[in-house]
Length: 212
Image 1 (spheres, rainbow, N blue to C red):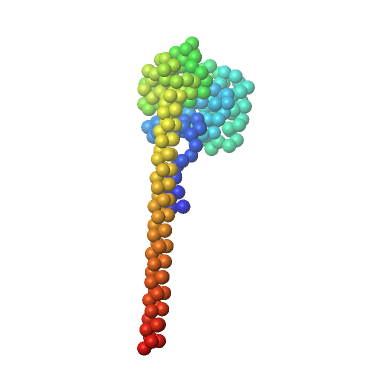
Image 2 (image 1 turned 90 degrees about the horizontal axis):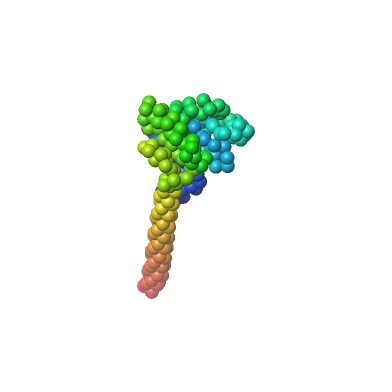
């Protein structure tokens, strides 16, 4: 238990949801507020539960999928959950959300408009961020102009860093276990030697006493 407490804390898995939450945790130290989740497919469904510590705004092109995602979240979320159902609400979401998590592919035709909306809000609130899970950094185009922009490339890099930390902690824990085992073995040997000496010394003393 002592080794587990010292070396094996915070070794949880690295799902998309946990990675996004780790990124947002750092960003929310600077700017905290509503999170806009774009998309309602399987990726968005897997990530949404990890965002429920903040007010959550949902947008998706398909109203049916949007409603299904909303229903799955609203009854168990501690923070408010809202659907953005109109184009005007989507635009406001991009302007006003503190952080935006995008779970749909890059779309050059629409991305330029979304980037413009985000930048308009960026002028009024420093520290806002976009986490785009639609592709890698080299595919991101104008998204890369946003200072706090994160793509799948950043998530994979974070995953590698977490895995390196995990392996280091496990190696340290194994080394600590080996040292404890060695100390335990030394104590056993010491106890055996001391006990054996006491027994022999006692026998010798008894013999001398009898002989006298």
